[in-house]
Image 1 (tube, rainbow, N blue to C red):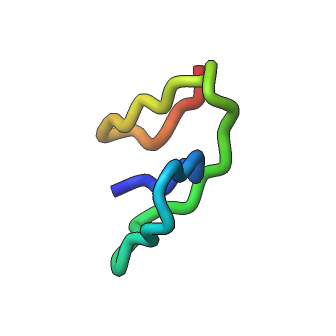
Image 2: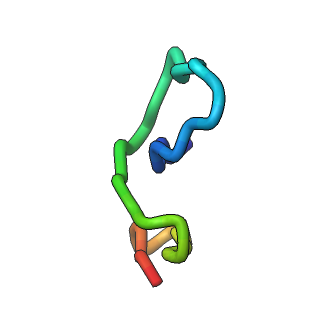
Length: 38
């Protein structure tokens, strides 16, 4: 599970595998090799 931020409601996840701040235009690709930001 990846937490990218960008919350529109006051909700926070209880468990986060990776905290990865991104812009709204960026995409996160999670593969077996790791995490890539595009």
